[in-house]
Length: 454
Ligand SMILES: *Cc1c(COP(=O)(O)O)cnc(C)c1O
Image 1 (cartoon, rainbow, N blue to C red):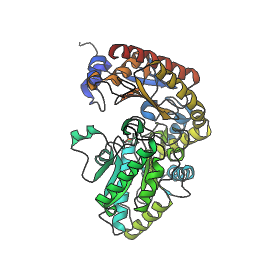
Image 2 (cartoon, protein in one colour):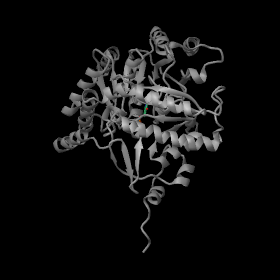
Image 3 (cartoon, helix red, strand yellow):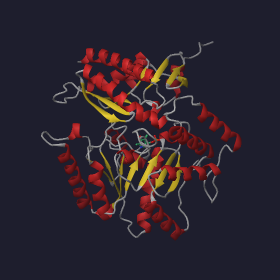
Image 4 (cartoon, rainbow, N blue to C red):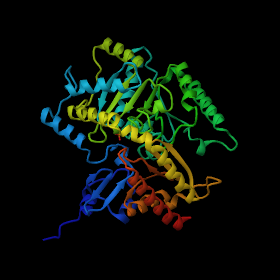
């Protein structure tokens, strides 16, 4: 009989990998994970890794939170699945919508559920198309986003995403327009101040609206802090500059808070951290602390009213996913919101953020090849450069950030390479000792890689 195949071999034979650097896998194999303990994951070889990326930003309460597991179990016992079509929905769905509006920055509003962040963005675009048509403006269909934005992977949300890799799909679709990324360190011109940079981005937005015609634009989507674009907080005053322009042209501003929602930046919402009120919020990831796939569109008062009127005219909004508002997902989300907001997790981000920044600042000081440290709350990036003065990047062929991530994995630390940056967005439950462990492991990984390529 053949020897039993390894987990790695089985994974590689039957699974098609997404967003994976295949040369790294060919060289290093697949990490097959069996379970987690607090902020750690454990693989089939019994190796433990501190996951400084909270899974994919979402496992903010760690990988074995008892309260969340119990909430899921209890709801599975009670009512394990239902939809939200035909005027029926579960009691958990009713309660979650109420809760989401209560914790939103809106005085009132309405919620629609999806299974993911991509679908929530997709749904929001369909809502805008539906709404503008119903209001007699069917030509208002173009969507404005920014380069380096990440809004998901469905055909529409990938078109909103401002990443070159979508060219392999022939995306973006027509009518998706990308504006300059508000990253001053990288895109500021020589001699330009941050205020001048933001003013330039404001003029660009005005110019694009003038060129395309305001009456052809359906909405503007923005992450308060760009996540998968490399953790990019907006240049100072960015939202205060773009929002009045959008308002003047009747273009709704949608905050994609899939990462920044529920505490990641030190406030419940990223828009609160950056002091603006959008017309709608997209939520997912932390919404269930990663314990269930779920996304939500949260409409503010004006869009709720306009949607209500548009729907009333045809007596139905013909949209929804089979598992929209799934009772188990809703029960978990209710518990996750309670855990994050009322059991001290959000507070831990507020208390721990200065320590996190100081630790990473100290690492930057020890490594001349770190060009920028940027972030807020519990989302940070260190950008590797050949030369800190000139900001000259490393040659792409060196795959520096991949190497750092791989060296970190060898140290028992999971962190993510994004462009030339390394991203750290740990679970909110991280203790001070675990934070120090993260710093020490990262420091060793950086020392090793910069010795090789520096
Ligand atoms: C992850 C992410 C999405 C997509 O969410 P999925 O659940 O992966 O579809 C959308 N927007 C932002 C800001 C994200 O970080």
